Length: 82
Image (cartoon, rainbow, N blue to C red; front, side):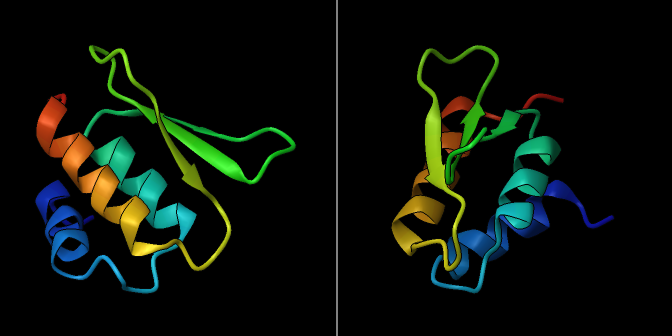
């Protein structure tokens, strides 16, 4: 498995890439975020254990760059769980 920073850096450099919800889930898990796919909905949810806010990401492809940039900022703001 690639180091956690690799995927984060790739998303940061290219938020308009062909990212899937599986990529988002992998990044969340690498950084210790709780990830929950939506039940009967087209959205997934990511949450840092110490954060109050929950990040909602549409799970349909293509995932728009605004959501990838938001995820990157969320991880950078709250930090990774080691």
